[in-house]
Image 1: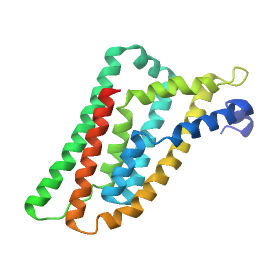
Image 2 (image 1 turned 90 degrees about the horizontal axis):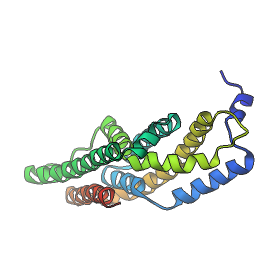
Image 3 (image 1 turned 180 degrees about the vertical axis):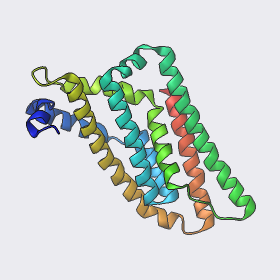
Image 4 (image 1 turned 90 degrees about the vertical axis):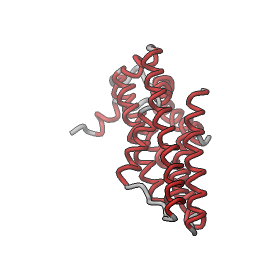
Length: 217
């Protein structure tokens, strides 16, 4: 098992580490697609759904960190065909999520039945796929993490992994905060079957909007 001294070898110098933490917090302070996704999940299905979505998203982000650390992320960045393939797979998945949500609302309204909450594993898996199928996350880590690698420390791969995991932990804390806050309003917004359907329509629209953003940017 690695000792604390071994772990220290893979951390950047203190000034670089403090700069990394500050830059990470500034980056995370601006709500992005991940926050929109988490808020939509929490609002539509409650705090637990939002937190499970956060867990899924950050698991997907961890995959990107590991991929970037071993160099596969650079391959995606240099290959327009591979980049576009992953990007359009992500767009298709978001469109599917939005369409599924809207169809659930329509079916529930037609049957005069209440909406069924997605299962926990589905919420988690959706979050993983939404993040994994976003090549821009890989590009972000490739551009962001190497700026804080110390040449006089241990191997660059170890530093990239540790910095990436630190960023993921910070992102999880920020996203979880939004999930909890949105979950507080969820109970009021879902007080009746009609309001729950309205929230689900908005949620489906958010997924489709995220897909449109992924196409435009």
